[in-house]
Length: 473
Ligand SMILES: *[C@@H]1O[C@H](CO)[C@@H](O)[C@H](O)[C@H]1NC(C)=O
Ligand SMILES: *[C@@H]1O[C@H](CO)[C@@H](O)[C@H](O)[C@H]1NC(C)=O
Ligand SMILES: [Zn+2]
Image (cartoon, rainbow, N blue to C red; front, side, top):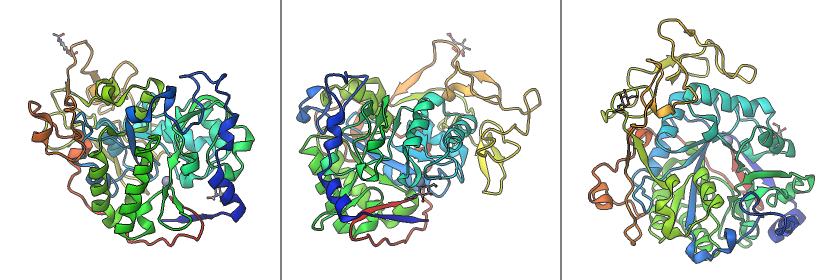
C-alpha cells in the first residue's frame, strides 16, 4: 500500500482555497443544457436546492477481489434508498489482482464498474485505459456502454489523460478534488476543468464537449484552517473525530446547495472503521431526500433533473432483478439457492493469483499488449464459452449453452422497489418494514452472497502533512 502526500506550497493553497475563478470561463449563454453544463455550486436548471435530492456517492477503488468485496458488502448491507432499493455504489476497478467473476457479480447486483487502468498507473498510457475496459468486457461480461467512467490511479492525471478518455468516448471522469470553494455539481468539460487548478491543468485547455467531470468532494477536518482529505478520511483522526467531520461536511452540502456528497474508499484501508461508516450512512440516509447512487445514476438525473419527490419514479432508480429461472453463468443467484454461478465458473491460474470467469480462461493473463488473449478453449471446441452477443443482456446470456434466455419480449423482471412513504427510510429498515407487500427485498447477487466478511488486514496509520491532500492507491 502506498501513500502519497501532496504537499502544497502556501501560495498554491491560498489560490486553492480562494478557487472558483476558472468556473467563470464557462459562458452560460453558449453552454446550453443538457448537452453542456457549466461548473456551478448551484443545482442545474435553477432548481431550488431544497427541492432536489441530496445525492450520496459511495465509491471504491482498486482490485475487486476476495479480500475487498466483503468490505464493500458489509458497508452497504441493509442500507436502503427511500424507494426500498438496496443502495448502489461505484467501483473504480483495476484489473491486476481482480477476480473477473467478482467484477461481474458486482455489476450484476446493479452496481457500477468504472475504469482505473489495468495495472494502477498514474498518468496512464492509452493502453492501460483501453485494456482495462476491454478485459473487463471480455472476462466479466460488462457491456462497454455501462463501463464508461474513469478515475486516475493516485488521482494522478494530465491533460493527455482527459484526451484519451474523450477519444475512447468515456461518459465521465472523477479524478479531481473539490474544496468548499469549488464544490461544484457535476459539469461538462466544454469550457475546461474548474477543480484542482493548483496543478496547472486548468490552464491547459481541457475542452471536451459533453464529457462530464464528477468532482470528489473533500472532507474538511476540524483544524484551523481545515485540511482536506479526498479519500479514506477515516485514516486522518479518531473514530469520533472523523464521524463528526463527516456529519459536519454532509450538513454543509445538505443545508447548502446540495451538491453531491461522497465517501471515497479503498476497501483494503477500511479496517475497523466499518461500524463508524455504517452509523454515518444510517444517519445520513435518515435525512429526507437523501439517495445513495452510482455515478451513472447521478448523471442520468443531471441530464434530466427532477424534484426529489419524483426520483423514485425514474427508471434508473428502480431495482429490477431479472427472473431467469435457471442457474446460468451470469453473476446472479438465479435460483435463489444462496450461491452465484456455483460449479459453472472456469478457474484460471496465473502468476498474480487465480481468478474465475464465466467467459472462458485465456491462454495468458490479460496485459496491456494483449488485453484479451485467445481462450484456452477456442470457438467450435467442446466447452467453449460464447461471449455475450450485442443483442442479449449479460444477465440473460448463458455462455455455456450459447443461448439468450431473453429472446422474446416475455422476459420478466421483478421490481423490488417500493413507493416512498413520505417518511425517510434510509436508516437500514429490516426487509419486512420497508415493503410490506414486497416479499423479497434482499439485495440480489453479490451483496447478498458476500455478507460473511473476511476482513482485510489494514491497520495502517496516516499522519497527514501539515497542509496537503492525503491520497492513496
Ligand atoms: C504521476 O504518474 C507519473 C507516471 O506514472 C509518475 O511519474 C509521477 O511521479 C506521478 N505523480 C504523482 C504525484 O503520483
Ligand atoms: C418466452 O421466452 C422463451 C425464451 O426465449 C421462449 O422459449 C418462450 O417460447 C417464450 N414464451 C412466450 C410465451 O413467448
Ligand atoms: Zn487506485
